[in-house]
Amino acid sequence: MKKVIALVLLLASVSSFAATVKITSFNYVRTSNDTFHSPLAELCGVVEGQTAVPTFVSIKVDPGTNNVASYNTLGDANGKFCMAVITYRGRAEVSITGETLTTEALVK
Image (cartoon, rainbow, N blue to C red; front, side, top):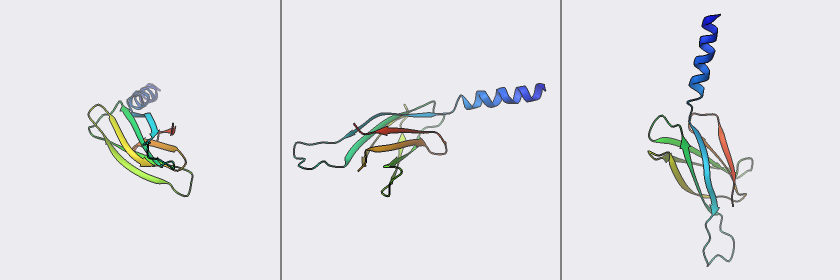
């Protein structure tokens, strides 16, 4: 019984050290010459609790549609990343490569 309790505590402590990703901004890029809305957007975020540098970040733009786009980028030593993406629906999902948790955002 003591071994089971120790194993549960160990698993809980290891999972608490898992890295998480947070989207800090997701905005359309606009210029004064835009007669039509351009689908170009900038997505920025930060990886918290990273254990390795660089951290590989996967980005899926317009998930759940027929035009899903996949992007990959690297988080710097502070975990920060930015990426220019094309979005027609204004939605994105970000995850750390190899992790199952994702973070969603809507374009502003």
